[in-house]
Each structure stands twice: as C-alpha cells, then as structure tokens.
Image (cartoon, rainbow, N blue to C red):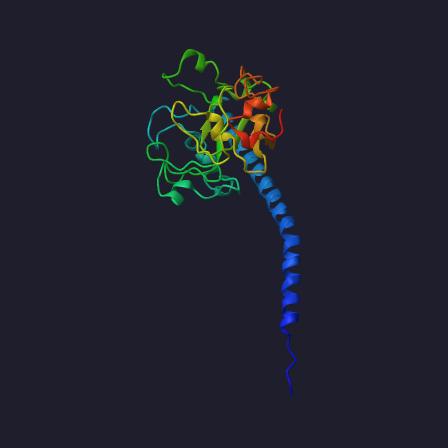
Length: 270
C-alpha cells in the first residue's frame, strides 16, 4: 500500500504561500511593534515625572543640584537623588528601542554613547547599577556649581513652582546621555547615528536628538504630560525661560539651516 505524501510541486506552492503571507504580515507586525515601543516609552517617562515630583515635594520644591565635581557615590546626579523612589523599578530605565548598554556591547566603560544604545557605568561619575536611555533637562537643576558664569546660573529653574509655561518645558526625553543643557545655537547631529561629544564644545542637542520613533522621540513635560515630539521641535521648546525658540534652528528656520544635517531635511518643521 502506497503512503500518500506531498509532491515537490505541492510543497513549493505551500512554501510560496507562507512566504507571501509573511510578506504581507511583517509590515503590520513591525508597525504594531513600533506603536507598542512608543507607548511603553511614553509611559516610562510619565513615571519618571511622578518620581521627580515626589522628590520635589520632599525637598521644599527644589530639584537636585546636579553633578558638582564630586565622584560617585556622593555626586548629586539625578540618578542618585531619585534612587530611593525608583530603585525597584528597573523596567522604566530604558526606551524599548535602546535597551542595550553601550559599554557592555563596545567594551569601553564611559565611552559608549549612541542613539540606539543605553548609557551606563562611567567610572568617576556613576556606578555600575546606573543605566538608562533617557536624559533630564539640566536647566531644571538647583545648580550650585562655582565654575558657571552669573549668566548661566540665571538660566536654571531650580524649583518646580518657578517653572513657567510648564507644558512646553521638557523634563525628560529620549537621549544617549544622562542630561543636557541645550542652547538655541547648538547644532543638530550630522547623522542619526552621531555619538554625543561630552566635551565643553559638544552640542547638547546631539545628546537628545534621537530618531528612535520614526522621525519622533518621546518627551515628558513639566506639567506631567508625555507625548511624541518631532526632532526639529527640540529647538522650539523652552529648556530655560529665556531660551530663544526663534534661533537658527527654531521656529521659522529656513530649510538651509539643516544643510549640515541632511537626514533631517525631510522632517516636519515647527
């Protein structure tokens, strides 16, 4: 008695049908994944805002001081200041699009800074338990650094109840480093994969201009709402009270302003 089986032609037809279905389904699956990543990222940022709000409630409305030249573990980075409020919630540290810690992948502690990587252990600054892929707005800090000029010191918000137009003031957002002090003149990244230069001459916009959500990134603002923001929109936010949103890359900037960042030219203008 012969056992009936597939012929080669029938098998090839089945494989072709499966391949066709996968070709149809994969774009939908990828789109759903991106939507889910965006939603999770936004939820993470909202939780970070709540954590920071609890901190200010327990500290007379003041934000943390920020790094003051003191080495870890006594430094005043926001990760240290907020630790007791988030220590058991590892899930909110990273955007789902940037969960791998750069130094673990690249083998160089303190040097890995890339848009689709998480920042992590940097000797002298913070410990091995600190990692993430978000940055706080450095201009919120209650800074006490003597190295800053009088003009710089005036830019800091310092207290939560001093923040004006809170719905346009970033608290935390997608980033490749732990914090940023953007200025209107700070240049955009030349490519979407440009690592941030942490030296004094580096653009702080490169730290936070991350193409993690298809021409957008996530941000939570000082009124507590979180949303996607366009990458060019970064230059129109009120990082500090006198931040010039009409600067060289701000509102009404000509398309030629992005000539050094050609990858951003097609993006939505604000």
